[in-house]
Length: 142
Image 1 (cartoon, rainbow, N blue to C red):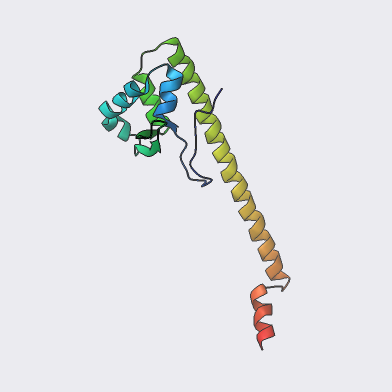
Image 2 (cartoon, rainbow, N blue to C red):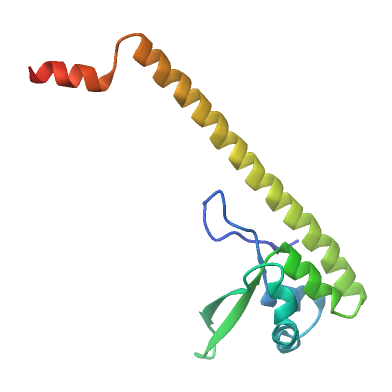
């Protein structure tokens, strides 16, 4: 299956999202219908966070607003779609990918935390051994 859920950066606090383009393509709806739903129900969607977007150039040369929806917003929006077979299959895959992305981000948090603990222990051991970089630098100045 194609990637449905994205993150914008390697920042550990970034929020996974999907786009109106992805929702339209994989639910079997046209993009205009999906963006119309977003505009009509944007107050509902904003209850679950900021409704992000980006401006992308289209093949025609025009620019288009592409909405970014977090997991809660995307879940709510797809409940507003008809429950056709493509929509049902898309819902299942989207849920799987949001959970997989959340798992990946949690693993990154854990790895970073473990790295901090190791670094602190090494720094403490260096200080206890009397190899403080700051101290040796100051001693060479005298």
